[in-house]
Structure formats: C-alpha cells, structure tokens
Length: 406
Image (cartoon, rainbow, N blue to C red; front, top):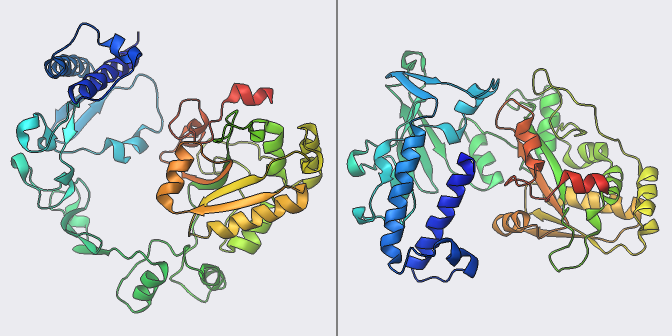
C-alpha cells in the first residue's frame, strides 16, 4: 500500500470512529473495519487519532522541505516541475500561522476528532486567540478592517520584502453585489477601479467604445480561461433512464451544431475569442494543440444518425442547466436555438440560483451544464486534469476509455 492510500484508509477509519462516538449509524462494511476497537468508541477514536498524527508527523519529517533561514525555504522535488513557482503563489500553498490550529476539543471550538481543526474566525484582522497576531500576509498589504458585506480595508505591510517600493498607502475594497450599482459608484467617482464589467448589460457598448478609442479606462485583455458546456457522460441520467449523451457521437454532433463565432459576435459582443481548444491557445509557453472541429451542421446530422437518432427521432429532450445571471441565459438560448434548427432536437433550458446549480453540477444532476475554468498555473494539466477519472472537478463524469469506444 502506498503512502497516499494508507493515509486515506486511516482517515476513513477515523471518520467511522467519530460517527460511532457521536451515535450515528455506520454500514456493516464500515463496522468490519473497526472491529475489535470498541465498545469505548470515544477512547478508541482519541487513541487512533493520536497514533495517526504521530505517523503523519514522522512522514512529514521526510518531506523535502527545509527552512535554511528566516527568509529562505528549500524545496526538493521528486521530478522537474517547471510550473512549481506558479504553485507557490496558489492559495493552497499560502502560509498560515500555527497558532490557529486547534489541538484539543477543550479550547472552545470543537476539533470534532479531525486530524487538524482550525477556528473559522482566524481570517479576521482582530483575531488574537492563542497569541495569534491578526491575519498575517506576506504581500504588500495587510488586512486592517473587515466589515461584512460592506468593505475590506488594507494598509501597507511594513514587513513586506519590498515595502519601500509600495507607493499606495491603503486600499479600501468595497463590496457591492449589483453590477449596475458598482458601475454607478465608479462613474460617480466613489471607487477608482473595477475588476471587470462583463456582467453589465451594456458591456458590449463599453467594449465597442474601448475598441473605437472613445474610452481609455476600459481595457480588453485575454484571460487564462475557457467557457464551455459539460455533457453528462454517465450511463444513466438522474431519473435512472438511459443517457443518450453517453455516446460520444451524439456529443460531437451537439458540438458541431453550435456556431461559436455567432455566439461571440451576436450574443456576447465583448471581444471573446472562439474556443476551439480546452486549453487557451498560446497561453502556455512551449505548448500547442491542433484546433478542434469547426461549425459543421451537415456532419452533426450524420453523427446523429450514426448514433441512432436520425432527425432527432427517439431522442429525449435535451436539458441545458445554467446559473442565473452573468449572461448565461442568453448563451443557453442561442445554443438551444441552434440545436433545434440544425438537429431538430427538443431543448429545454433551466436556470438556477448559484448554490443549487453548483450542487446539481457536482452530483451529475444534469444533461448539459454551463461550465468554465480558469487555469491556476502555467501547465496544460491545470485544464486537462479536470477530465481525469476520479478528479474532483470532473463534473461530466468523463471516462476516456469508455468514451473512446463510443
């Protein structure tokens, strides 16, 4: 058993012991894994957790990370990883102060028998529990005030390695949810900068003004991201019926029946580039991929027939799921109309609020689902890993070997 598998098994056992301690039922299979540890489940859980923590501490001592001095960290990699420096800037790798860790359940916030537990209040600037000196950052600014749903106030960080080069003394980041409201705040001079304006209904007009030289405060820049639709690749749909989209020929037909250039030009109208690759082209040095297929409704119809749905005969209604707002409905309407016209398919579009949408997407409760992804580091795997079997972001349930077989 490799190290990762061993850790997963021990964490699973700890979860079972925690459930038994709290009086929750477990399956017969799970009970078999902890046979002989009871009936003092609370004591068994505590003992098992401490043994696991000790084992993890021992193994972590063998990890190739060493602090050479107060400002230098040496990391030894198993193999060359050209995007490693990108990873160090990723949120998962950001340092946190050790004092936020809850070591005992008697410290006021229950650790609930987990291996590591953290007080959720630690992100607040006035958090000083167990000697915590407030939210620590290693960037040019530190958080001094946080008024929930109102604003965040940042001041210059005196401990930043290049503090003398930081010109701005403070930043007040206002929290404004409505797109029209935050734009009006900008126009009135109440805010100095907006991160994006694509949610505005009149974003196309702003883009046209920027491209025409009428405004110099609107900047159109490429993004390391892709907007796409997920097709449910599971053998069956949530209601238990057979899933026609499990056939890759039907998925390709739906792809070929969408005129992406028309969506860019007539629906979005803000300068987007047609996506013919999952990984944005020319975004990663040294990486290239042949563009995918172009709009071809004739071939789409042929593939429909090959899949057994000539003229959409026998094809159940195709449902498109999207989250409300951000212009997603307009895109879904355009795609639906193209599928109706080019494939004679019956299409139903369904918008949901973001929380319900995210839950349905994660649990495969959809046929076709709006999706997007922004890369986290400069390597193709930041996109391609999404479609690896078992990856937590593989929302369509794509399984390459099955789909190659059609």
